[in-house]
Image (tube, rainbow, N blue to C red; front, side, top):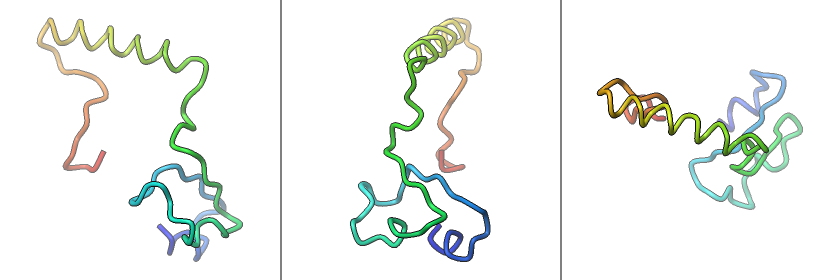
Length: 79
């Protein structure tokens, strides 16, 4: 990740998840001009709970009907 930010393979990076949390104070990511660091709550909006409950409701119906669930974690893919 740090190599990609330093060689500027993209114009700008927005990062909110790191291998070590919280990001160490001495990380060079804090000083790079093409990096914006956000807390791991950057996806939280006033619609967050509404969307979360809609997904939960959908998954509850799917679970009861023995259908595949949405937003499942795939540890082999790393997310």
